[in-house]
Every structure is written in C-alpha cells, then in structure tokens.
Length: 241
Picture (tube, one colour):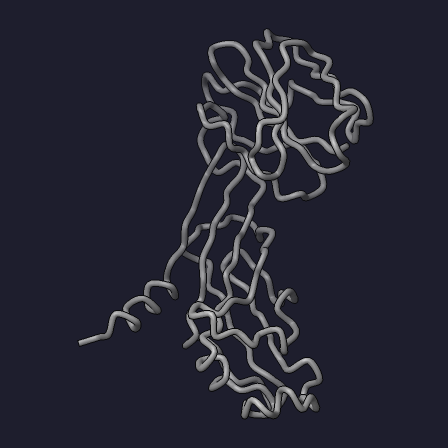
C-alpha cells in the first residue's frame, strides 16, 4: 500500500490548475522530487509538462525552486529562473551548484555529492512550482462578472477574440495614449456604463464613469482596464504607464 507521502508526491507531479478569465489563461502546477534527472557531470534538470493546461501558444512561465518539506539548502544552487525549450506543452529547468562543481567548503561539509546529483534533489525534496500566463482569448465571449483579470506584463497589444453573434467588437474600443502619463482616454462608438482599473494582483484601483481617466497617482507599470458597455458586456484592455 502506498504511503501518504508517496500519494502526495504523485498528486504534485500531475497537478495543473487552469483559470480562464476573459482574454487571459492562468495555469499553475508543481513538479515532484522524483522528476529530476542527472545532466552530464555538471548538475541536474527537470522537464516540466504543461500539456494538460491546453495552452495554444507558448505562455509566459514564472518559476520558483522550493523544498516541499522545508529541508532547504537550495540557496546553494543556481539556474532556477533560467527556462529552456519553452513551448505550449512545457519547458526545462537546469540546476547546478553555484560553482559547478562546487568548491564551497560549506557545501562539501553537508556531504552532498559533487557535482549536484539527483540524490540531493530527492533528499532535499526540491520541486519546481510554476505559473503559465497566456495572453489570448481562451473563452467564447468577453462577457462575465469576474473582476479579477490578470496580466502577464507583456508588451501591450490588441486582445484577440472570435467575433460571434452578440459579442462586442473589441477592436472598436481603443485606450490611448498607451503608454499613458497623466490620463488615458477610452474611445468607443457605443455606450460606456463604467470602467474599472486593476493592477497585476487583481486589486481594484479605481472606477470611472467618464471616457477620460486620471492615472497620475498610479505608479509606473502594467494595468488592465475593464470597460462595461451596452447589454452588460465587458471589454478588457491593457495599458502601460
């Protein structure tokens, strides 16, 4: 009979959460300590499989190296933030001792193999926790009641969507200037009920009922604006200050 720890690690290896909001898809997952593979004589690597999330394009991947049991010692390694072979279905992460092979007495005193080997990763129970953010239309319409639209911070561009019956023409609504400094203006031929501005953490920063929005107090960065138009439809855009 499998131990609870083994079952837990198996769940970690296959877990993939997909959240779709408007024109943004956000997926999360975590690898297992058993997924690491020895790489030549310099370190180890892990292939992260994101196929279950159904990305249509290569998303923006964010990763962290963690010890699921807090055994730690992953501050002695480098390479975690370097993503290789990124595709819609996965990517690869390499790890090595900071000196590769390590000459640090502190590393050697821990009796870890030199160079870094899979046995250390398993012993320390290291995993890669990742988030994938895809900026494209993952739904059939732009309607919805959710207020949590999250941006990846990528270069602003026109959102893409399939124009179906009853779906607002997203290209008919413009937000300018982009980047903006003191104000952004919403240009739309139809009726605008209100607009909401959110930061990258889905926090509501302000609500406006006019086409001209004051952004002087906003720090420099990426933002999203949700525009509520006729028939309770919503168009989501992004802008930069």
